[in-house]
Image (tube, rainbow, N blue to C red):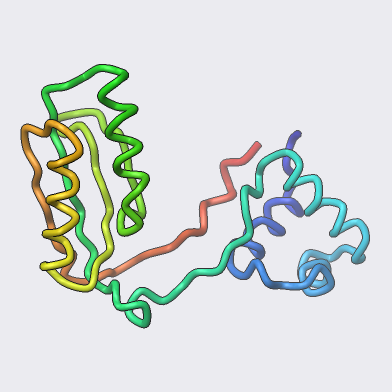
Length: 155
């Protein structure tokens, strides 16, 4: 499916506020309600829209400390990765988990209320897998944070 400018505008609007009504979106993109609704349905069916979610406030949920954890391991096999992935998936505080290229193997983004809570997560990680290096960096300030993806590159 090739996206046109209207599809891109719909995606941009939904990323900004997924609770927008079809009628609000249709007005902003210059379509009547039914064709706009059909486009949204098609975007969902084709997988451009993976889910509609709300974004919670980390401070209000008392998880305002963001920790970026860089992991290195000497294990590079499928079984190790499967086991470690399951362990990381079970830790709610891990909000992002990336396998990396370069000098680190994995990067985690963790949200916690304080350093003590991070230490408990650290202990779960080292209990779950053989890791040769664990380096944590605590974010001092969030300058930009968005869940909205750029839509200009979609074909």
